[in-house]
Amino acid sequence: MKVTAAQLAQLLEGSLEGDPNVTVSRPARIEQAGEGDIAFLDNAKYESFAYTTQASILLVHKSFLPAQKVKPTLIRVDDVRSSLALLLHKFDVDAQPNGASISEQASVHKSAKIGIGTSVGAFAVIEEGAVIGNNCIIYPQVFIGRNARIGDGCRLFPGVRVHFDCVIGEQCTLHANAVVGADGFGFALQEDGSWKKVPHVGNVVLEKDVEIGACTCIDRAAIGSTVIHQGAKLDNLIHIAHNAEIGYHTALAAQVGVAGSTRIGDHCQIGGQVGFAGHLTIANGTRIQAQSGLGSSVERPNTALFGSPAIGYKDFIRSHVVFKHLPALQRKVLELEKKVRDLEGK
Image 1 (cartoon, rainbow, N blue to C red):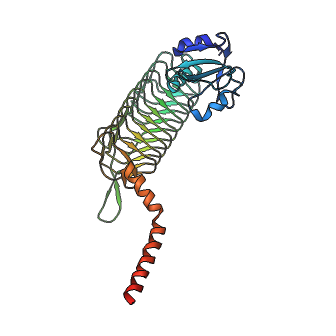
Image 2: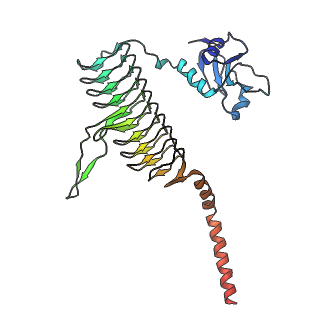
Image 3: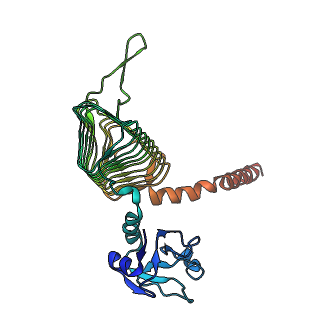
């Protein structure tokens, strides 16, 4: 696909400096871009590349003042990151439905319903009573279980498993090998020391515009629903346990673990490898630094936390400064103790 600078400027509602007729066919990183590419500058650390890049078009903030001559045509916008997201959607060929096409190698139950414009890839399995909306892309080897519901405009990449009775809202994206609706980790300890499995008869509900990363697992509820609310974004290799709830537009980075029945509020930002104990409530707007551990609820909105167990972010930073000096402090204490003993001896 080729598009002109003038067309992109109109799409992004930006101002144009340079040749309006120059064309690009793909996005590229500013330090690697060549002729026919569009690059972007969103971080001052990369400004030097603006003067050496071979890109045909460069997307910059409207306040950018070049210190040297810039070769590419410039498109100035209010928000480079948001404009880039819009731009990448235009170049994302896989996001465009390619018409109704059900592979002969797919297994689709006769009672399942496939929407208009939806494609189903080879070796996908769609079981009894499942309903898939319009303009979806079901890639090869996807499994959609009995009575599952998939909303309009969804993309399910290869190897995704959506178990029985689970609900996926409109415009959701599930990346390769994500599992929605596996049993939660529920076992009852018996008198003889063995474990008796607790059946999980609930489901998982993903609301509109949720994105789930590769190999992420979201367990079905024991009773009721495990819920991922509208706009939430989950990275790769995350585990959401049974009956947990993730709030509106909350983002979780890779390898986060959320134990059962914990509710994370709206607009939270959770760093990689953060762990949550079960039955917690995390207030709206909470920000948690990577590798922190939460063993208690967070009641105050917009709190920043760090550490394990997590404490206030600034408190942790101050404590960490002291911690790094503990060996030196210990030596000083030992020296002072020796001096005190010497004085007492005299």
